[in-house]
Amino acid sequence: MRDFDMLVIGSGPGGQKAAIAAAKLGRRVAVIDRPDMVGGVSIHSGTIPSKTLREAVLYLTGLTQRDLYGQSYRLKEDITVADLTARTQHVVGREVDVIRNQLSRNHVSLFAGTGRFVDDHTVALREVNGHERLLSAGHIIIATGTRPARPASVEFDDRTIMDSDKVLNLERVPRSMVIVGAGVIGMEYASMFAALGSKVTVVEQRPGMLDFCDVEVIESLKYHLRDLAVTFRFGETVAAVERHPRGTLTILESGKKIPADAVMYSAGRQGLTDDLELDKAGLSSDRRGRIKVDEHYRTEVPHIYAVGDVIGFPALAATSMEQGRTAAYHACGEPVNQMDGLQPIGIYTIPEISFIGRTEDQLTEESVPYEVGISRYRELARGQIIGDSHGMLKLLVSPDDRRLLGVHCFGTGATELIHIGQSVMGCGGTVDYLVDAVFNYPTLAESYKVAALDATNKIRQIDRLRD
Image (cartoon, rainbow, N blue to C red):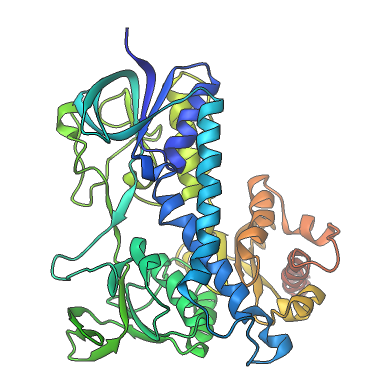
């Protein structure tokens, strides 16, 4: 008889939800993770700390209130790293307690240490004291997550030259900063440090940033970041980073030299599979450390599953949770629906970006006709009340069946607002539902009605010409 029905390696969003889902189905479940990493990278150095830091930045700088109280408005003049991390440490501590409590309440055994495969049903647990013990299970779920990719040519010291996981190690808020990589993480931190008053330079080898987003939204974000003195160096590659007593010098292949107090690399992530000894279980990973899975999150070995960032795109906490639950249900023989292809994307820049469905460029490439409905926060009473004059909501509507093809939001509360559009799209609703619905007033949610009316008025104009 095996020790457990299911063994989960990693307690991040995917692993945690997989373990609890299996436990709810009456299975004997265990989770392995380092004692200082309960909750995974998401809790300790990724999603939760970065979003809490963003909240602290917005509050302490008073940035969102400056439209109302003037550009010189500040809640606190000299913001220190201690000011920023106090809130982060509080939230992380509470979240770890919540996760430990959930696992305990569902009778999930939590083993402190790291795991490696001995065979396809057995994992060797290396405990903190160095002792090893063997744990066997009918099903195993790999949810080890990722770490930031670090170029071998760069000498990281985690103080002045760091990756995105170590950015909270900064001893003080830098006066100037170079961020290498204009992906989601890079742009989130660029906007945070710019809001704190750091002079930020973003270096990206591609010709633009966040190219999977709506073009108009990205142009708006660029405008706002430039307004906060962010400099963009697109189409540029870093040749070297030098550390000097007074700071760093980033040298680009084009010959440009950028002095700064600190450099942060945000150039992709690497799957944490190096120490798993996957080959002993009959598994392998690609050069980025990612594990290949099927639509049920099964690996090449049918009773071993992998979920979360370690399997690659979309590598979001929200999707990882659903992957974990889906994998656990499948492993336990429980009926489960396929994950809906309609997934919301949330980017916590300042201001926020969120979208679901297709972009204008994608619809144009696919020769799908659409009409655009736009609502601007400055035209909403709630937008005036909160002092957000630049936010916007964009609906892409099919003129044929009037269904929503895409929803794109930029501004305060975008990551919350998107779920209204997601619900309408997921239930097969049309733009007419939004036209006829009554929204609380004054709210930002009212932007859906304004945008829906805008789109339907344009469709009506075309229909009138045809009559």
